[in-house]
Image (cartoon, rainbow, N blue to C red; front, top):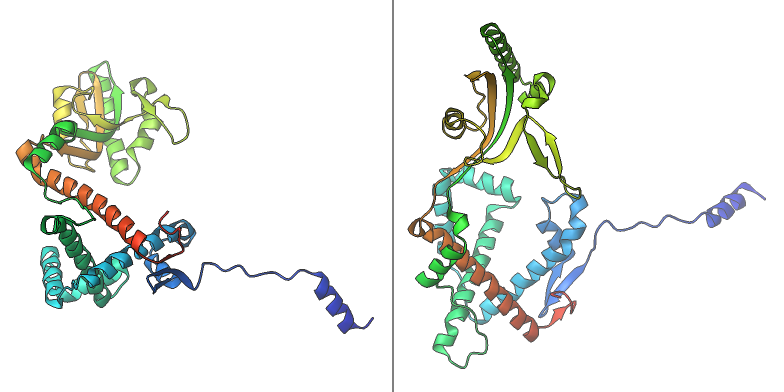
Length: 338
């Protein structure tokens, strides 16, 4: 057998590797004759890591298809948004950010990965859909025979009061901290001076980028560490000693009034205290996070409540309208919205 025949025989016996496409291509969906391609879907996912894209493609396609349904309906109602309105929106955003127009455009480019022209088109589509929703929500008032019944996005004072009373805990005072600490016990004045010098030395090391948590594990008596409940995802909770508290509320903090004032009022996030002597302890505190929200009265909470209720009604309206349009439209694949 000559060399050429041998090569042909071997190549016939070795299965050829088939190339698997990295992602779908071609037409992803048709909505009343309009096409959405997989390239368009991929463009929407440009900022998503490649490993996470497969699970995001179908939801993204559904979102694009829903938007197309809404825009088609908006055009059927002759809804359009003049460019001057988009100019007003962009100028308001620019002024609120304190940027020059050039810096604003650069921000849009870097944050969204699109040009200012593409961003204007997105704003226009969003405004058209918003006008459509408002028109359809009020249509039953003009035409009692209207088959599609959307919720009015108007929020009454009674609705807001009911929300406030049902979610009272949302508006209570919230004072919480995440804090890491180290503490040394002393018995005599000489020991106090020694522990204070040690705490000051450790403070310098922490400021030089040696975490206080690690220093506490290395130098602190474990008996002075609180027993803290920790729970990792998928595992039963564990109780262990550690030199830190997370989500520690003001009411539950096991400190004196002076230390609580230091932690909840004086220190700012990221601050490392000077050595603190109290009783027979010398301590350092590193405040990692602080939440200090005052209690909100019904009057204070009204803007927030109104936004929450309006958003909830808008989501319901979007689903009602989408389901109605799907029934009246040609959608391919047929199970796109299932």
